[in-house]
Image 1 (spheres, rainbow, N blue to C red):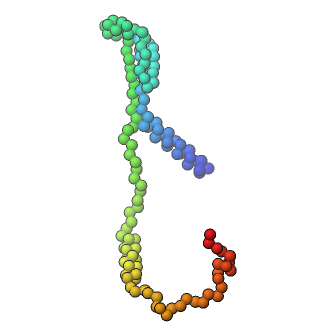
Image 2 (image 1 turned 180 degrees about the vertical axis):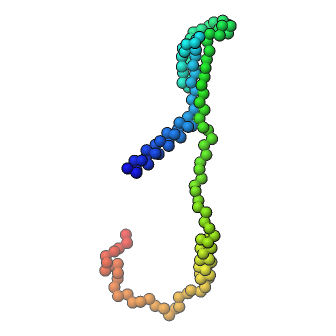
Length: 132
């Protein structure tokens, strides 16, 4: 049920983002007080009175109305959240790195008289584990 709710929430948020950034225009042509044509994303066609343009200016019978819906253009990515680490957690780690550096600087060579323990049996053959 939780996975279904998570997927549904992701889909709802993606549609919200899509519709908040979507921009479109609706163009309407009126002849007198009646609507003649409506166009989405385009210019509405006229009622055929454009041939009488000089008369239309004097009578004012035709008009065009355009509704523009501008979407959001300034989207910003959100930076990842990074927790603030208090100095009490940083100092022991730095001291640990310094002490490791001091230890590695010392001479840790193996004495020449050291010999490895005797090999009783060949372990890869005993356990039948071979590298391929």
